Image (cartoon, rainbow, N blue to C red; front, side, top):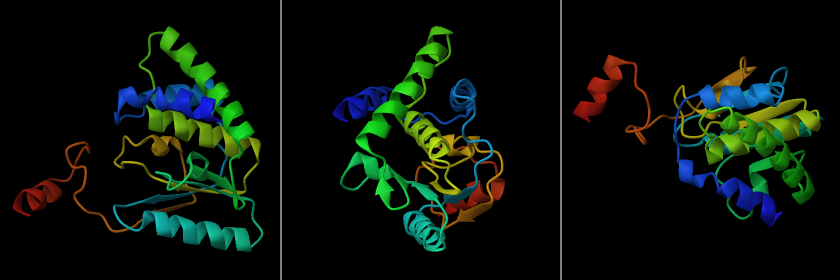
Length: 186
């Protein structure tokens, strides 16, 4: 398993670059595993992890095969990708990582920019949940904004927005002039 995690961490050097172009290309090369899946998409500054967990547990308790994708992890990397109360196994993580990285190699050889670490992990989660035929996936937004890699999903069943603060404003594209004025005056 350490091999998969090290392969993933090799993409840390690309940092957090918002934009969906790399992610869309990667998902296309993977056969768009996210398409046709049922997502509950959760965004916000505070509380999104708790909201994700509440929804996940409720769906599980009602007998649905449910996945959850969160970040960051607290104790072990595998907890970021969970299905029906079980973290992704080391074997599944290795297999899904290799599948994703094979397509990353193809993309970069074609001259496209390399996906970021978060994009790679998100793609691994999509591949895993598709293979396991999850009924529902509770998907936590990463940094946020319209360029967040989780926004590659086309139609979430539900979008939940917890409280929003002005964290990471230097990285997020802001469209609302009202929000910009409020930010400057706060």
